[in-house]
Image: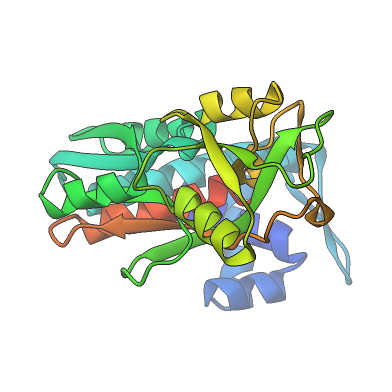
Length: 283
C-alpha cells in the first residue's frame, strides 16, 4: 500500500517540473521531497524519475505509477470531503424553468444525487414567476430560471440574448400584425416581447399560447408564428429574425438561482457551481 504523502510529493514533482518548485508548493523542504521520492522508489523497486542537473523526466515505470497516483489522491480527497461534509439528510426541492429542463442539467442533478445519497432531490418544471411564488409558499428550496427585469436577490449564473426566432424560409409581411407564439402569463420572455412591441408601435396578434418550449419552436418552425426564445434554444429550422424586419430588440436573459431562506447554503452553492460549469459552454 502506497503512502499518499509520498504519492503527493511524486505528483507535485512531475507537475512542477522539479524538486524546488514542488517543495514550495507543498510547503516542504527540498530535502524532504527528495526523501519522499527515494522512499517511494524503494517501495516500488523501480526508478521513477530520470534526474539531470536541469530537469527531471519520468521513466517508463514512473509513467505507469503517475496515473495510479493521481487516481489514488483524487479518491482520497473525495472520500475526505464526503466524510467532512457530514450526514446531510432531508430533501432539496428544485423548481426549474422549462427551457432548462434538458439532459445537461439533469446530469448535474444526477451527480448531486450520487454525491448526497441521504438527500432526496426532486425537480418540478414550470414558469419562473409561478415557481418563485411557490417557493415563497414553502414548496421549493431552490428555483432556477431566466429573468429579464427583476430586483429579487439571486445568484446570476450566466446571461445570454433573448431573440426573435422564426422559420428560416419565412419573412414577415410589412404592415400585417406579427403572429406570436408565447408562453402563458406570467412569463418574463412574454412580458419583454409584448413590452418591446408596444414601445415600438408594432401591431401583433397572439397566434399560440403554449406552456412548452417545444410547442413554441414547432409553431415557429412551421411558419405559423414567431417566438421570443434565448439564443441557445435555437433548433434546426429556426433562425434569428434580423432587426430590419421591424421587430424591436429584446433584452438579455439572466439565468438566476434563487434559494429559500431555509435551504442548505452549502448544497445550494455547490449546485450553482455545478450548473455554471455544465452550462459554461452551451454550444
